[in-house]
Image 1 (cartoon, rainbow, N blue to C red):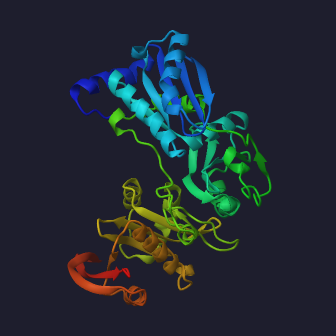
Image 2 (tube, rainbow, N blue to C red):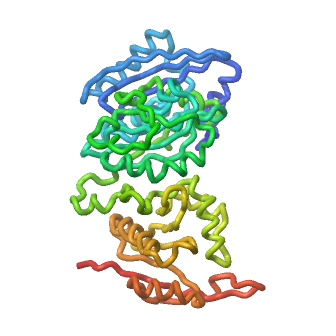
Length: 431
């Protein structure tokens, strides 16, 4: 629902957010994340809705052209800006300057008109186009991220809920797209048993090597597809009815490439939070999503006397903590979650399924946390361990951790008792 920062703006936004029940709704959409600059106006009254779109192709000039295009479109449709119910914008990922243009213009209009904004991702804006042509399919959307990389996400077109996220947006080398999909597809299929098939859509699939080893049965849709204002406003209407809007000052672009100037060696390791697919048959190390939580919870309950709860995992993901899983096909082998502090990364939980321990998976998870922490200039890693957990203490000692303190009565120990925690730290080599 809409959150309000003051009584005055809250009243205005609240009236707009509920107005679709009784009167005409006008949603303006802006999309500038690629070389295509487009604007669209959706008008809904009762059960009918109509969309008018205008677009301009070019690698530059989005900032100069966007507002004139908006003015021309509104004039053509005979709609005053004051009649707008909300402004939707293409959130990205995409061109660094482009996604800032759409977000900035949307924020300005939202603040001036006191109406809410609706951020829409570039990849769902591509996927929804395929959903219109191939309904009830599992949709693999990819966009060109330059530097031989692609933005990728997976969705399923659900009859009741529309687009459902199976894989949130990630940044991958184009040549590893197929391997990444092969490793995750069994999981996605298990989460979408009603899907009629698998299709792939978006300009990212035209990159060299992107489709080299896609699983059999995948159907190509539009491989020229890019996000458009029309697809943005189509998704925005669903969010509008669901009350999923944001205040203008809370809107922000979505960046996946958090740093461009990585060395070749750094990029090969997946630095910058970008997952890398593994060779066939190996475990895939990928960011944890909500779809991983039930399996992670099973492992946690199998290896911990006092395991995390579902809510603990849910809160950690909502807080944006560093969270990764190791999967081989549909099987979850292990996971880790860490919280980035100003000077260290605090490992909150790391676990490997009992049947897969002592095979190097814990080291893989720890190595990923280390890379992520070093990329954020942390000086080391910090964690707590029960003194009774001798196996864990031995593992962390081998990995270079040293005890730096004790937290008294830190852990529950059953029957109302408590157990201390050893505080361990590993300091990165600063040379």
